[in-house]
Image 1: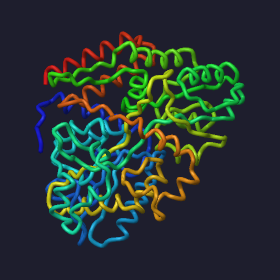
Image 2: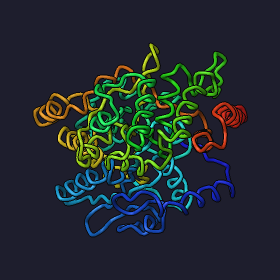
Image 3: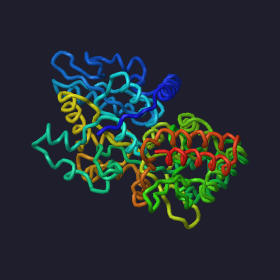
Image 4: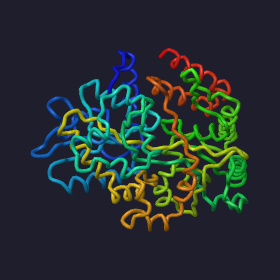
Length: 459
């Protein structure tokens, strides 16, 4: 189940650089994993694992990427309820800054030090990278060994196409889908009216950029912020909705980065032009979301998982609409979020990890997760269940656009082999250079594409 990377000192140096910057990231729940605090968690086993025993309880770590503004409080609530509901397992939640890329780098460093959490959130873009480079227990293997009374848990509760999101390129079920999201456009209708725009139901990117310019010129405030976390998820939606494609699987079986197409360049340059003329923002994700809820930016393009944050903090009339399109081209929105994977290394901890994971997939827990975050539930019976989301969805129409565009969902690009972290970092560096005005979209994207293709060819 594992291939050992041969990265040596270069990998250690890269991880150290990333981990060194974690302290300045957005605050979340628990302690930032990958720091010394993660290694000294309560219940650390004598073997060096970040799990162990405390009295009669098995203590396990659950690594997540949910800041307070994106489900962190719900993580803590679910963990607290689970810990109170049993007398043999204690779960310690650990927040990882820098989203899924940061978690992967932290996991790499902890495993190299002989430490492993028990259960981790893995972003869709890293399904191959994770399964190629880390020890894990497949969910069905855990069920077959520790939950023989419920052997069909996966097929009974999840649709095949949803389970497929956590299947790697070798056809193995690496984990179980947990968080499902798509990008939507949140709109401050009051600010648009102030700019002379009475109809806030913007459906195309042309309308969005024109509205952003109007807001800037008539109110002095910003018009648009497109999320910029430590992943390229939102930009994939822009590029592929305009007809581009990040990665192409060729007929000979090889893979090729192809995002520097005319369509891809056009989508990125339009966003950069808006930043350059002052109608759009180029700042961190937390700052961008805060600017929107503070009323200083009229439109926020980000995950539906920010729905709860927007509803609770906006002091104006806010709505959400489906991800805008480019003319008559089809909408393509990558599946955001993550799957859960078991990384515990001995039977007691694997059994505990599965028991906690199964609790997270109960109808009640899934409903609490959706209400607290805005993620679309992956379990097939949660939306219509009386003890699930039936009444909630009827009252919270801001969720409707995300549900309506589920047929437009495409896979979040997972770079094959060991190219995952290198490709993702190249895309982030490229984005910063383009939006920062250091490179044109054409020059920056072609250089990044060449860099990634060199890595893909060398595998």
